[in-house]
Image 1 (cartoon, rainbow, N blue to C red):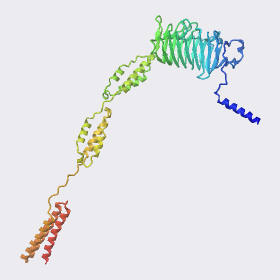
Image 2: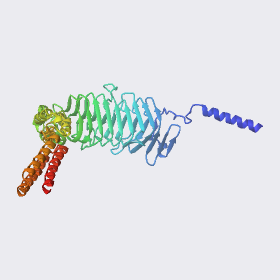
Image 3: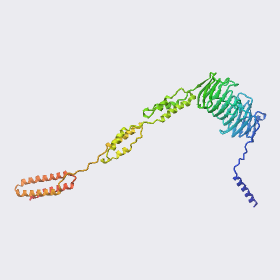
Image 4: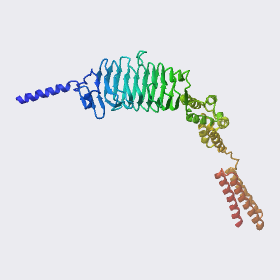
Length: 515
């Protein structure tokens, strides 16, 4: 009995717990409020803090972050060893906030710095600096993967910043004018090989100045990826001291500030590829007034325009109601555009294609069809044995054909004319000629018989003569019967009776002769 009560109590407890809302049994990571200094002696060995969500692998110099929350007031959240490369790997949603540089360094060897990598595409590292100082300051920084959101001051390096396949969002628009309000600031070079870079800056979006950098060969490299910049001074600022070149060979680039790419002391900026969007930019490509720097542009891609032009010129303008829009679009072709003006070339192609698509064909010539139709409808179908083919041909008339379908209209004309030509008129009603009645024929036969009898009585001795006369009458009677039969074939009964009467008379005459 006691065991039954215990079991019932446990079951009731389980049911009550199951009915409660789901509760996350895993507590959020503990917030860290002190600097994680990776240069101190303890970090010569592996370190781990599960409560705060981070671990350190000394052998590979890798700091792994998993949903960390660092808030360190006016001290850096992380300090790395500037004499070697530090890998920061992050997963989940990580947050670091400081009133000074969030990730700073001790030392600045040329080939060292920080490599930031997200374990997945959705892994996020949020860096926020609130004191008008750089968000990050390293010898070199590589954004390998994942998403890094930097708000506050600039991301700066002594040498190079590289973006591989990461999403990088930088916002320095709220930093005071005297603060570090650029986006990406590099003394050596900024190199973008892929990913997605979005910068909203209070001064320059990408600033490559060359101060203190050891002979950089190229100040700017953009080979691929998407770049969208909106900055107050210039979206991209190249050249001061020993920065001499910029090279853009690919990527999808949007310049949204008043000045796009600005060349100061940079000797030249080569633009060999890429797609540019500069509609919001007053001066997309500008050179300092005291500089001899130049932009070298590749020619725009005219492939699609060539196709549109060729197709439009192949059309017969006489087939259309109005061809002027196509002619104007063809006249507007300008083959002097460079690659940064590709959108202008694309618009030319679109204008031609749109004008061609809006063309309206002239109507086909229905003159002969009108004539054939009128003539056919003037006929009285009751006069013909079968008028159905004409009616079918008339019903098949289609007046929606355009000039390129003239053959179809001509076929309609032929069908009507052929149907009319093949009509057969009905036979007219028969009108029968007068015929000899059977009573008249009988009277004639009796008369002939009487005449023959009289002839026999008066001329009994002239047998030879009578015989010839009788034969002659018999022949005449046969011919008369034949003629009577042929005179009106439509009256078969009357003709036959008449013929029989004649033959009967002849037979009587012959019988009398024999007697």
